[in-house]
Length: 251
Image 1 (tube, rainbow, N blue to C red):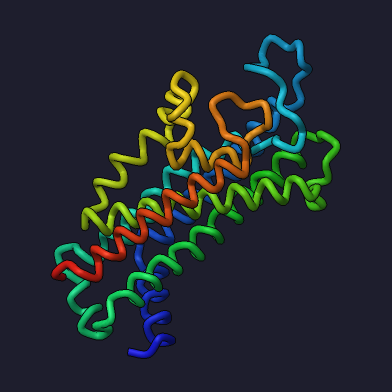
Image 2 (image 1 turned 90 degrees about the horizontal axis):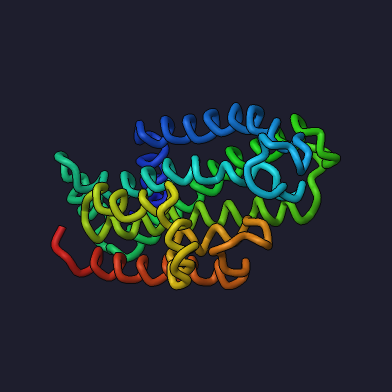
């Protein structure tokens, strides 16, 4: 199979996998209404008793919803990795058509990265615009500042790297359960809790990635450059290990 045919085949698999459409819809359509309802919190004055914590700078409004989408991104990466090893053992047909395993693994990871990036941009990019439109905080919802676009880019990178980490763990385990068990506690708050009481936990992949879009005074978070590099290192190492195992193990 040619490289183009391989790319088309894997794209078709990913985009026609029922869970892809469902997870994309839930992530996007679940985030947007939350953005509208949560925007009310940004209209409260600093001394309002209903305000939980310190006021967030306007350019960071809306990014607190990132944790919601992380859950579905982890599931997508895990299912994409494990799907080949289900009851039908689709991996055998895949490798029969394309015996060269390295390109197969690389194309799978690349398509997951592209798909996750699109989902995350539509989800959180739209949510940030909705937040500023509803909050009336002085930032034009459709003409966001350069810094906000940079933060959205950081969030897209973090979600994409998280999906690739889930994919790598799922490929190693040949199961969707392992990446979910490992990453879900981190994305639902355990990682941030640990980082608040134990400094090394700031280097956990999801926690490190959150530095790419967190307010500068956030506790338990690395600086953006360090956080991005740490999460990138996690993803790169796990993908290399998973790719090596994919190449060498029996199907």
